[in-house]
Amino acid sequence: MAMKIVPILLVLALCIFGGVPSPCLAQSEPPPAALGLIARSNGGWIGSSVAIEGATLYSGDMLKTQENGSLLVRIGALSFELQASSIGHVYRTPYGAILELNRGSVLYTTPGGQANLVVVASDIRVTPVLSLPDFGRVSIDGPCSVTVYSQRGQANVQAGSESHLVEEGKAYRVRPENEVAYRQYVSPDEVDYHSYHSHEPCDTPQVAKGHAPIAAGQSRFLIVTTAVVGTATGIAIWKALESPDRP
Image (cartoon, rainbow, N blue to C red):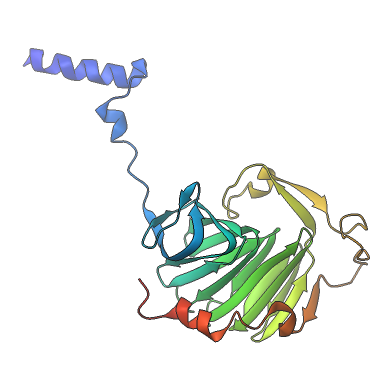
């Protein structure tokens, strides 16, 4: 009996004191759970790998599209499509998922009353109203300009200390408080999220690129016509995002 115990004690000693890889350490970290999948890819990438239809998506993955490309992602009942020349990072959350849009544009759809998909762009946070199905578009037009369009449903938009409800069929151009430069990518829901990127105030003539600074009491939200954002987020794309035959 004593001879059987000795090898076990040696393995445990290696685990604790030796810093040697062993079965006891290998079993301590389960493989990450899948977050979603790639439903369609045209010039899309997951990190440094070409994205193919059916590929598994994990929390923290970087997604990007080439010029004229697109990438459709399913996360349960949630869907989003990165449009051409776009980059984003997607993360798991208790309420569903959060997409940090770093460049370009994204279309999104949420079912309402279930999981939710939040989009963060230049520290502007777009949260679809959970009680309603929502279909919309978020676009980074420049370092200090983001357009939010809710074609169907409603979305709450937070820009600094100011928030606004974007109603169905409305589009707003939003001026962030800061231009963002990333040092490291983490979920926008992390408590110390803002410590991973730098901020340059947008409300100066140099940063605003010719636009006057926002005066005290002036809103960061400017309503624009849907023709400016292109209503063709479009019925065809909406149907593709919500298709009951989706993978």
